[in-house]
Length: 364
Image (cartoon, rainbow, N blue to C red):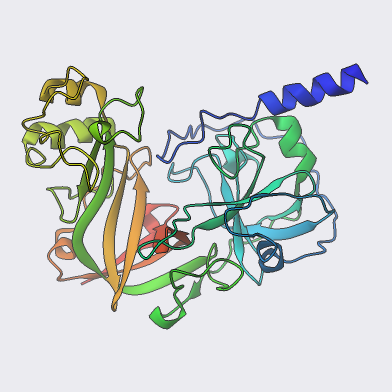
């Protein structure tokens, strides 16, 4: 009995809390040695993804205590580096994120492959919910219980936990995305249980550049990230950012150019710490040189319009295409783009994540 409890305690300890961060993180895209044989599981799902999501209650993560099994085909890959320690699967009713806590997932789970998820013992939670008039729903996910209580789900960091719940089914062709219209896009109150396209691979056509970016910069990532004095929001305009995202090197180029010097330090209701060009010392011994040395921004949201609906395209600076320049015709509004990716929600707003730059097609 003690041996069993020890094994369980070890598995629980391997659920990382440090990986529970909002920013994108580096994805290691090396190839692993191919397995000697592919073991195909034969399981029968007993609930759809939409019906599973319907069991979630807002702000009440559920430690699943029923023998529920879902099945779905893989729609994402972390090989280009724009997805981190997770993947999405979908069935006919909807899509959902599996927080698997490993790099190089593409070596184990192929796009188009069927996966079975034994949900008993996992946690159904949401990321990105915000209450109030300017908030809305986030994404319902499957993960593990977060022992810190900071998030509703944690990553399944241990191989034992992953192999106990995720089973590989038949491989197949990549999922063909459905082209959806503006009318089919989710509203702020929608989740996977009310809009079938959330969490799915879809194509959006005819998007126009909205002339604004969003990037949250932490001045010192080792200090409290919720402190106003430790935050810089690059938002509401382009701020000279013409790439899909930015690596560390590209971040430094933007920073050194001075295009961010007039950007305020702080949160929306607490801009009392000066600007990037002239910071006021809030106890950080901060100067512009200090900010450059300690901070970095690895994810960027570029905004596009689909008719009258705003689409936030989120891209990681760790992706292979993060530093790629957005075509000038797109920035000038002379060209539109079609995008294929996973449709997600964050605080009631639409966020869109592509697998690679090949998923963005420019039309002059």
